[in-house]
Length: 144
Image (cartoon, rainbow, N blue to C red; front, top):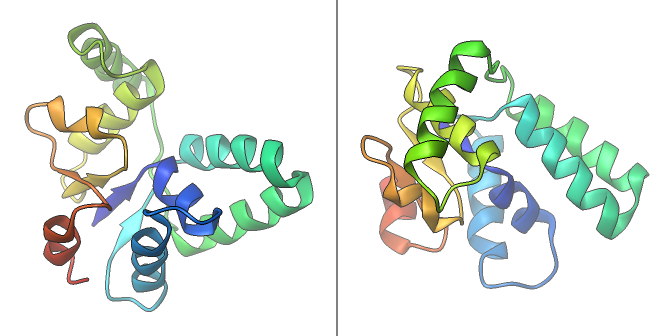
């Protein structure tokens, strides 16, 4: 099972962009059962916040609710993830605190095999399998 970052969700429903179609294809593959994926409440919260600034609250709330259903069960981030995330945050200046906690959540769960994000800073973390939706090789590894 893969963990999706906010970037994938935003590009999948966003305006024309080189990553829109790969992200849409990934979300569609999750929807039809070809790819197993999840995310966190925090990612969905960030998605809703960014989307509402661009398209309004109603649109953001509706899309966020749909993603929550599609990606259920969601990963629950806990205090151990926060502690691990702060260690990652200290060690990797290229990652913000939010992303560092997401890394820790992914690494602590045996069923998570990779983190999909357009943010290439994730690639710097040892032990994390970062999958870039803009990489044909990474998409191919997911069967896309």
